[in-house]
Length: 173
Ligand SMILES: Cc1cc2nc3c(=O)[nH]c(=O)nc-3n(C[C@H](O)[C@H](O)[C@H](O)COP(=O)(O)O)c2cc1C
Image (cartoon, rainbow, N blue to C red; front, side, top):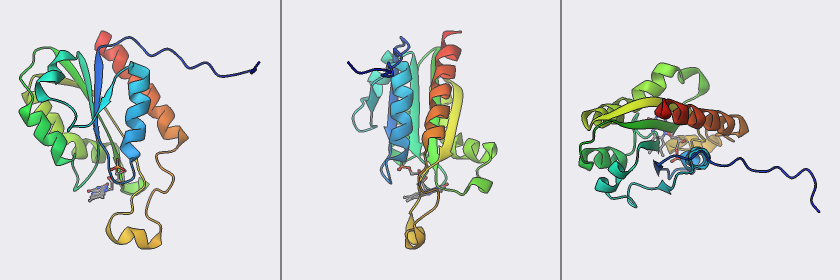
């Protein structure tokens, strides 16, 4: 019999959904799966989800790689097409390609500002946001291996897990 096998923790019971757009290196998808694992939530792309089905969930996480300093257009468009809600919680997460010294908290907030505003206009309370570095070989960067190689790493995934627990606790409170 296998010894010392790590038993995965049960997901927290929550009527939650994670919507993610991730294409460059699937960096944000890694974060999405960790968060969804904690919440016991399905992971869907903006293309897989109907705007009206989003309001069936009490907590919705929206995640994207950062492209042109904001979320992907498919998520911004989804937010525009979602119905108005009352008393629903949302959270945001992203991976960016900027080097560490640029990536302040304000930088993450700026990248999230557009989708945050759209969600608030639809009646969502945005209860938290998470951002971490992701491997970036966009444009000329691929000539020298790109920026943030190996990111998100194990520590980023642990931070994402803690963030998801925090989102769960906040949405219950
Ligand atoms: C077309 C394009 C535009 C990008 N624009 C930005 C940007 O404005 N700011 C930034 O920090 N990173 C930028 N990046 C880097 C990505 O945000 C980063 O690599 C991210 O981890 C990609 O996520 P994904 O693998 O989930 O698609 C850009 C990448 C691409 C491909």
